[in-house]
Image (cartoon, rainbow, N blue to C red; front, side, top):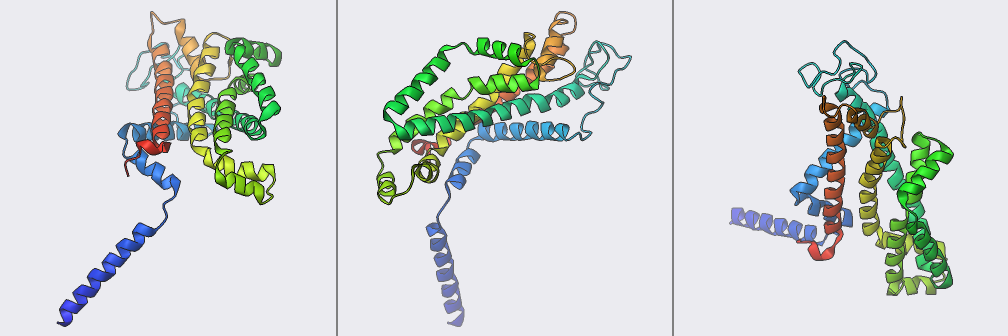
Amino acid sequence: MNNNAIELAHEVFAKANVCSSWQRPVSIGAIIWQQLLKTPVAMISFWIIFTLVLISLLSFLGLAITPYAFDQTSADILQGPSATHLMGTDELGRDLLSRIIYGSRLSISIGLITALTAFIIGTTYGAIAGFCGGKIDSLLMRGVDIAYSLPDLLVMILIGVLVGRGTQGILIALGLVSWMGTARLVRAELLQLQHEEFIDAAKTAGQNSVWIILKHLLPNAVGPIIVAVTFAVPSAILSESTLSFIGLGLSPPECSWGTLALDGWHSLRTHPHLIFFPSLFIFITVLSFNLFGDALRDAFDPKSRNL
């Protein structure tokens, strides 16, 4: 009898623990992560992005993670992939893999900084327009329409001429053409949230506008904003690569995947590995960010959750 009583007590205790775990609140971040874990493509993309960002960070910090120095020349000129040089060498005998790893710090950094710039400018601009409404909203949105009507490539070329070629010019150019989509998205989300009861309660309680935006509106619109920022990174990487490829972006001695692809273009017929591998890294990075962004958008959508 005593053994049965002890077993019964254990069962009751276990059920109580299960019930209490059911009642524990689950954060939205945990729910999103659980959704991503159920999507193999999202997790593969996540780990590819994590690896590329880690490589660029280590390269930016000056740690020796490349087989050779990125500017080290050798007698092995224009060699194809081999055991010594996994991705071959260029016209000066420099190891292409080392140069791609070194170039990742500029390509990835430009993508992340541009996305952060788009987030700051677009969120601020869209929040003001969506919260104020009326004439202010109309005036600010006409400004966005005007900015959208200007060709992005033309704007980036003009800024490059004014500021000069280099990392600073690229960042300014990409930052000025990448925030409009985020601004429109934030404005639309805030206009929708304005009619919620908790916003009316906050206004009735006398909370100021800045506090309402930061405390109540933006946290409830964070999902679409994060997704938009995720898509801004590959767009910026692709834009930088395009500008550098056509000779309007970075210039030597600065090294990015776009400049490497430009160098390889001149030897496309005779030594295709020079353009293939930089282009492959651009393709994998852009595809990974886009696939992860799609999965993140689905995870934030309550209709697609299967919990």
